[in-house]
Image 1 (cartoon, one colour):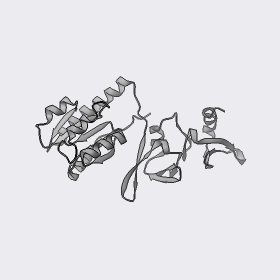
Image 2 (tube, rainbow, N blue to C red; image 1 turned 180 degrees about the vertical axis):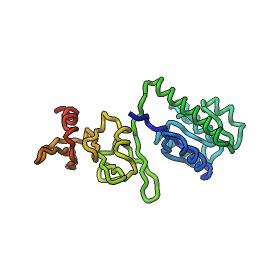
Image 3 (tube, rainbow, N blue to C red; image 1 turned 90 degrees about the vertical axis):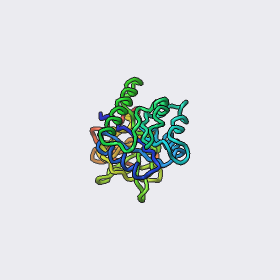
Length: 244
């Protein structure tokens, strides 16, 4: 099963600086930018909201400084952090707070790649140390009317395929994301979700009953009344996981 992507938060009060980092990350493999922030106070909220693996953060910003953001997590556990700043006078403090690297603007591609490799290595070592070889998806970013929002996975009842998109069904809301069903299946916790058909993934605790339709086909009825097709190859596994 594919390794979960490295989840990154970018914090800088300059839009061009945020774009600069995002552009460089686009050349790295298996990376997901989960959000951005333009001030220190929002950075604290976004870290607690998204639980990123890696944070790129400026030092001098409105609200809290980057150093103060790290200090806010002294008792909670700050994600792996790379400082990005035009000033090198904060480097000693940054490393005291366990930042893995300190990039002084302007930095070139090689210097960025060096810092990123160091951060990825630290994160992977931490996962191995804790026995966490896979981090299941907790939140899915979706774009709606030009704005990015996040759908918590624990609110999703089921997922269906719709052309190049997957539709996330959460209560009465439906959100479209440009993701392959195969990719979503690999990122979701298999203890909670199961792909019952090439075009459907269900949350197991939302399942009410397995139905047998005419012609030997099968379907599943969810607790909200939704019925979804079940492939014959998945029927026995679904029955077993339902306790049948």
